[in-house]
Amino acid sequence: MKCENAYFNWSGGKDSALALYRVLCSKQFSVKALFTVLKCDSKKIAMHEVGVDLLRKQADAIGIPLVPFYFDNKWTGAEYELAMMRCMREFKNDDITTALFGDLYLEPLRSEREQKCHRVGINSVFPLWGMPTDVVMSEFIQLGFKAIVTCVDNSVLSENFIGRIIDNQFISDLPGNVDICGENGEYHSFVFDGPIFRRPVDFRIVRKYSMVFTDSQEHDVSRYTYLELA
Image (cartoon, rainbow, N blue to C red):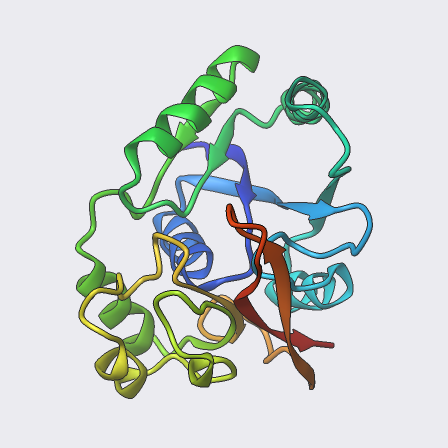
């Protein structure tokens, strides 16, 4: 059976890595690109805050080229959509017929992705969809994946979780009100080794930092703590 050409919507984190592993094992798709959305100003993934240079090293270790999509924070929603649709049509013109996603269970997000894909005539596939989060994490760890936490939402997690390796002890230490996969944005990660890699990704920790935003009462609040990697 001929494989379908696909591109993977890549975050560099654990869910993406496990979903890609399942896709590669299925042999149903030929993954032509890891497609990553990055901020123009910092050249980093929003929330994950992992830079493009490290993502290229990660993609090279996997053996699938990285295709970055840079967006400007000053764009309107319509401008973003126009640029994204243009990029997706380029994939379609290159005979890529399927978009792959690592989402688990957020229905509105899936619906939005499916609608965008449908508009350009691309199929959308979600390899991890509906899997219980404890099964996802157990499989990720048992397969030998290694990931470091690069962002935590301080409203639900202590900044002490920053820089930790995702393992059984990490899961055990998570508060009961936190999704163990961080599906609601409680934390984000960078995967640097595992069965999809030809070799581990070399990286170093640069610093830990916080981003300040203004709340509804005009107070400066440091809600997120990040780990800068290089």
